Image 1 (spheres, rainbow, N blue to C red):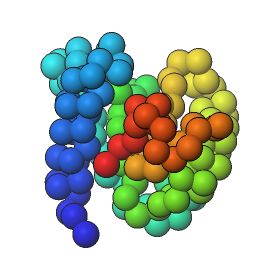
Image 2: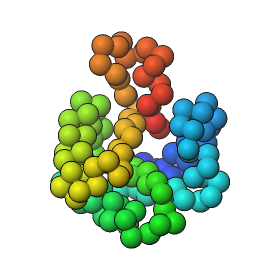
Image 3: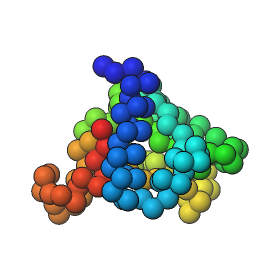
Length: 131
């Protein structure tokens, strides 16, 4: 298993080469260049723990204007895409509960990301596939 620094390095490289390199998000380069993107690894092993970490990151975004984006990396939980996809409902519910819906958006990425109605190896799935 990679240590947290190695995990962050892999995700940062993916953001720089895929997300920014292919211009999948027009805002990502600016946030990276201005060092306003936070990369953090969650040690969560349960969905509940991950929700707690997500809540903490949302509070941090609210309190610290120098951070505009958090990439909450969770290598120890939600390993299957099905579980991850189901968890997104809880994450959106947390945004609503915190009255941050419409202020922050959860962009979802997973190594096995698959849009509905597609085959696993269809090209469009790769826009949301992270390391």
